[in-house]
Amino acid sequence: LCVVFLAFDVFFVVFCVALACVVGIAVCCCLPCIIAILYAVADQLMQLLPTAVLCDAFISLFKQEGASEEDIHQLSKYKFHKVGDPEKLEMSRPFGGIMIECGSDPPVEHTLSAEDAVSFSV
Image 1 (cartoon, rainbow, N blue to C red):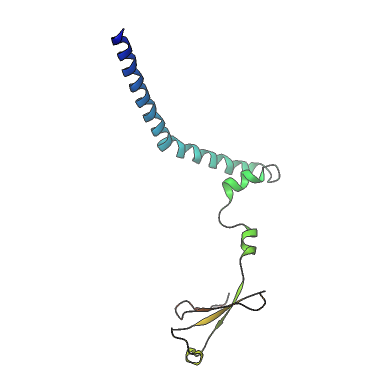
Image 2: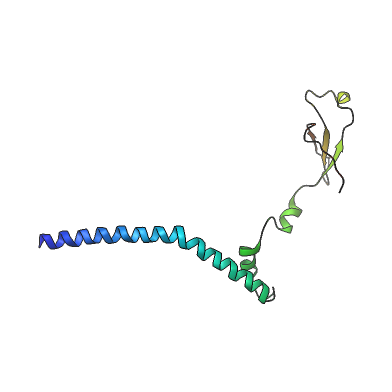
């Protein structure tokens, strides 16, 4: 009887180790493939069905890249003014410009170093 219980215990340990290996291989190898297939299926659904049919959560889960329009509109907006002669301002470090926050009262100013103060027109 003792040998039977010992054999059952060894079989159970071998079974648990094998099952752990199978789960590990499945997570490392199969899970990325499953995610890639789901992404491809979602892309095909986006092309076949009108956007109104699909759930917004499903679309945002698979297709949102970058910030949303709402996130962008929540950001502060600034105007940049390049300072021509930094010696007039008596700053202790090299100084290149001022960023003034739009829509704030009183205006909030942030100074920029000369290497960060690059002005260009779009």
